[in-house]
Amino acid sequence: MNYSMYRQEINQMIDSLPDEELVKVYWSIEAIRQKYLFTKTMHDKGVVIVTLLDKEHGIMDKWDSVFAKSISDETKREIRYDQYKWHIFSFKKQDCIEKEAARNAFDAVNKNDLFVMYQNIPDIVFEYNNASDIVASDFDYEQDIYLFDRNFTWTYVYTHESICGPYFYKSVQG
Image (cartoon, rainbow, N blue to C red; front, side, top):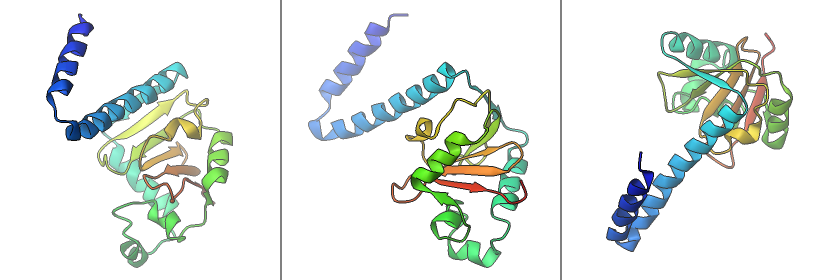
């Protein structure tokens, strides 16, 4: 495949745009680049990513029942839990470790096999296998991502807001 042809066409498209449109182009390309770098990092670390489509709702429901079990439905409505599950941590409704301490806790925990879900991708859960080498910084360009072990004993949450999180919570049931 002749990739230089694509590069030339992309450059021609960019050259045809007014300068004020270049910001949009930049952020679109940056998003593609970050996704590529994330995928490459996971691959380089030997992580096997499996997309789970058949049982995702059971996994998502279990996350709710384990990590938000002590939060009443009324409180969930007040903090807009349906918008962002991580509001249980940012609104201080669930005790957790925050910021750098959360990153350190995630880096230290056993995470050979884990689940990953995104707030804004409601019907897909990913299973990461052979993931023991991943660290918090691998997810610094992800948004509203929830990572948790297969036994639901801990969860690590990285939000889209720089002033919120990351959060690490270890379940008492685990």
